[in-house]
Length: 268
Image (cartoon, rainbow, N blue to C red; front, side, top):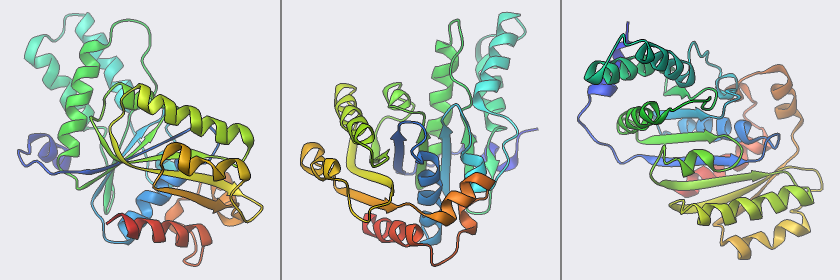
């Protein structure tokens, strides 16, 4: 049975101009943890409700946010495709079935809801399911003033136009030379893909020296980023990541939390 709130969202005719934040970066740089921190600090500063979208096939945002995912859109997409191939449903009924099943994937928390995309497409034609997926995400997004998307490594999700435009694009890198070079490639790729974004923040994560690396100092001019943000290597966050604890349980005096608050307040 579809959750009441999910059913309401899918039937809602009210359109909200959502503020959309998309986070990207190569794997292992702390992208998902930063996504969780952004969501957590949005909520803490009164910007709610938030729709959290886990578009990373690894699907670990739920752990960072402290919620449990029972099913993903990827799994539902597979089930709907299988049923359609067997001729069990056709036409309008097929679309309604897929929409209702995806609605059941919505995880409801106190001040945010979350939907996980799950694994990427497998072999075969998924055009129909992808089109419905985009429609459902758009309908869900229209009911939330804030949408935060944890993308898979790279900009594939944005290029597939799961969302049409982004208010804030966040790129995350580690302080290594290769990490900074990845940001340059991602920035170039964003323009090649015509990704529509209004603001760009670049996070240099887990910095141990207390200053932005020399390689990163040139990024602001090269990318015209609104902010180059240095996040220090943080022991508490490292322990939380190892144990799978939610970022909402971080101490109030955590340095990274304080920095995130500072920049969240500058957004609005």
